[in-house]
Image (cartoon, rainbow, N blue to C red):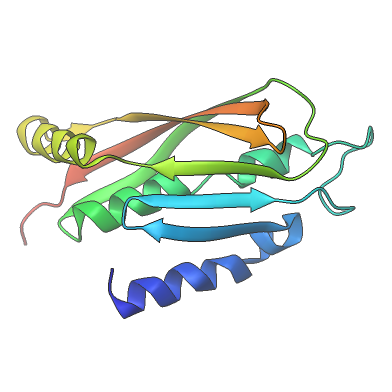
Length: 149
């Protein structure tokens, strides 16, 4: 990862929707980002647990950003759809780990080159401090190779 990418990934922690919800990200390597959110008065709902919108916000951009970095500028990567299932109330700090293995990136690149566009699906669980699954998120992305100029 180059210096510009590192700087941009630190800067995202100051993006107002993430700051407001108390969401912090940490890039582990080119393929992995860890995100965490403490329970605060800014992301607590009426019954005292994590607000569902904040749980989704902590999962929203990461697969797209990781895949954009790994595929490079020759590909268009967009978020297309998402769903979230709430499993248990989030009563403390929650975390999620976003990772795209090398093999999956190469499969996406190969399929996008062959088919023109593809819509890969990714899954992540939001985990509470005691290891319980608080929410499960499914993300659908849109990927295609840019047309030559």
